[in-house]
Amino acid sequence: MCLAVPARIIELDGARATVEVPGNRFSADVSLVPAVKLGDYVLVHAGFAIERYRPEDAEEILRLHEDMENAG
Amino acid sequence: MPVSGDARPANVERLLEDIRTQFRKLRRETVRLMEVCGTHTMSIARAGLKSLLPEGLKLVSGPGCPVCVTPTGTIDAACELARRDDVVITTFGDMMRVPGSRTTLEGVKAAGADVRVVYSPLKSMEIAAATPGRTVVFLGVGFETTAPAIARLIQAAAQAGTANMAVLPANKLIPPALRVIASDPELRVDGFLLPGHVSVIIGAEPYRFLADEFRRPSVITGFEPEDVLEATAMILEQMLLGNAEVQNQYKRVVHPEGNPEARRRLDEVFRTADASWRGFGVIPGSGLVVRDAFARWDAVRRFDIRIAPEEPETGCLCGDVLKGKVNPRDCPLFGTRCTPASAVGPCMVSSEGACAASFRFEQ
Image 1: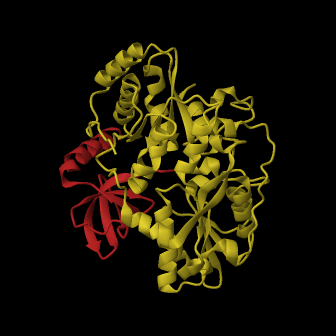
Image 2: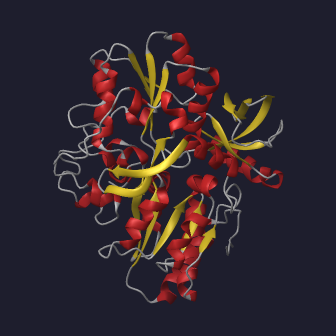
Image 3: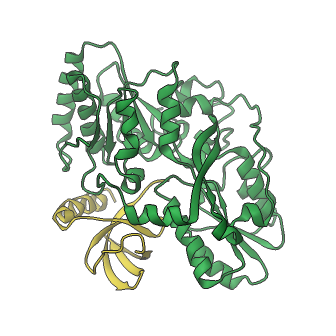
């Protein structure tokens, strides 16, 4: 139940964001990660971003996304 | 806090070779490591990791499946509320088939109750707006990963002045359960793979007692198979050096201090209290209750709910499975009276339960 996915913020309006994982977009609340900006990668759990990835880890996230896509 | 480890998951074969070498050097017949989190249990079962490890190196499942540890009395209370015409129950999908003492939320829904599955707790606000005259009660399960989202739901209801919204809190905290497990003289666990996403919120410090008081190595672990193997190698390395530390393998998203903003929100809305865990009984300081300032949004107070503390006797060994004392297949009900299609115990209901994972992936 603690499943969470890395997703990229593609729209941001106050605490409400639209985030993207490959093949899917959904809304997420970002009130628990105050410093986020458009384009950031965040970890999303139960409709909430619960942490922001450091920009230098974005490459790692892209690799995981590729793995997810390859896994179908 | 000493923290080491490579944030980037490395090659599986190399990690397995490291693990085999370290295990040989330890010269121990068996080493038992507990994966605390149910999401790890799933990941380990799906990747077949147990069969890749050296004979004698055992991974045992822990209490980290929120669905599995939710007491029967909480399910009964939710089912009873759901039967009221003036209540809509919202909850996570995992909760629908968890057996109470007589029925499940799925059962009362089939009999006409309004029970709705939501992905985000905040969805309950939209449902409340669309169902005036009825109270939406969110059944709030989950560990520290999920509890801040539920705190935000209560804050959102308070900010909007939404009167027909309440939360039935059944959240649980991981470190107090680990203390119970580490203190149990019957339990032989040499080290802990700590839950990655719980740690995103709480950081590394709350686990320090595992090292300082119990001399057990532990590693905060990510969810890819490489993460689990790397963390396993890190625990074996600590054992070889005679160390006991809390290390962080999942550095790409777990910061040593956790997420202070999430904890601040959590602390505004909830305070800790003793809580009953299925299979464990009452664990001091392991639950969350709504603070007085938010009492209007607390379903326990609004509906004067009393939760029966007794667990019914079913022959199910889920409690011992959650403590890592027995394997799922040691239970006499496993695969006979208890299967994922017709589950007796919660460890078989949740896809993250140790029994369901064993049934699905380890035939």
